[in-house]
Image (cartoon, rainbow, N blue to C red; front, side, top):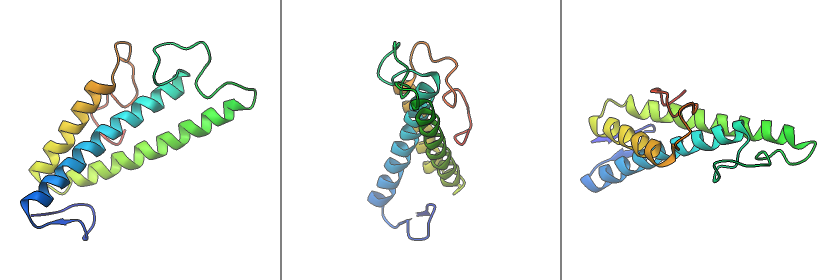
Length: 129
């Protein structure tokens, strides 16, 4: 039915195709989660709290660099996953396309907060942004 990302990832039955679509939905929702955490790290707040007195990952003098490294690692992971999602959509399979869009939508609904109008990546229409 479809080859996704690698020649070894081929679906040959409806159950394997359904699992592939589920993997696309979960990967897309995870992408939104990574963007949410990256935004919280960059803004200096804990991912689980709306406000924090102590900035996230910035609790000691040398921790500023730790926060910068953590932000860089999160950016790299988020970018890599975003490009993989883009490549999956470029398989030109309608089911994969809809699964990625569904995952991004569900991830946005779950991980966007009331004050997250400025959230980097969550308001972007590009999965690799």
